[in-house]
Length: 303
Ligand code: ATP
Image (tube, rainbow, N blue to C red; front, side, top):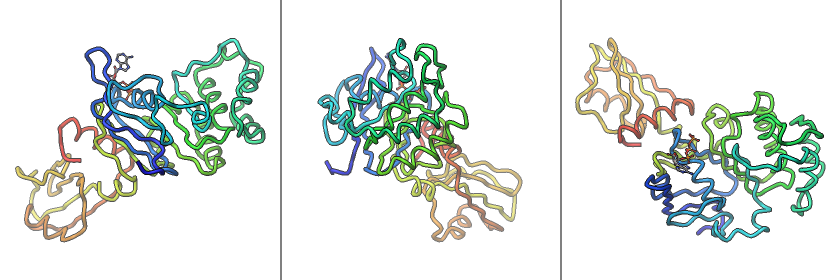
């Protein structure tokens, strides 16, 4: 294993009864990256995080965090990891302040100044009992408790679903940049939020990693291509397997090329489609990338 891989899964399987939630999952999160794990509902994102954090064990395969087998994580290793999830169990009887005071001594690197800065941004009522917090406030509390010790690795499972737009912005634009050298691993469906920070994308489908690569490479190779022909367009019966979602309308054929290259583009298109009047290409926002990948994965296409 290379020392700069902070999270790794190797051929991880996880079964729940007869259902296989993870089916030979491989994953590698490089140090310093902001890695977004994306995938449809039920793809296995939360199960992946639970296995990595040893909240559940794998049926087989290995997961490592900061170079240590997940099933052997010591308190010293855990003190370098921040973990926030919707389903986290928090002590309902304590107030916000009591809980933060309770946590501080567990983390030698706890930074009181950073804590106050986070608390002022999150605006949580200090004297309110945790059991009386709203869903979003509980998430905000989870974040408030996971950041002040400056974890090396921050793992967020669906952190945005309960946060209001201002708190989301405070988190992504205000807090994360304060964190210094941080590796971020984030599972979320909120692709617009992720797009602004992600450096790497892992696309999970039915318990398998179908694609894992730097976001700039993915955006470079996935392009929407719009070809205007000299005559009415039809979707060719035999088209390159990298062409996804091809559709024809009037003289225009549109498709997503999953391995786009400028090399001899016009000539390649002319050979397949006939005389070409114009070619327009555009990169896709992460939201559209996700929908394209999800449709292609369902159809068993080439990613
Ligand atoms: P979502 O985006 O909807 O939160 P996810 O990608 O996080 O989904 P998981 O929660 O990891 O998906 O679930 C993966 C699969 O495993 C689903 O089919 C789910 O029903 C199943 N599963 C998860 N936890 C359990 C459990 N405790 N018992 C039985 N099945 C489970």
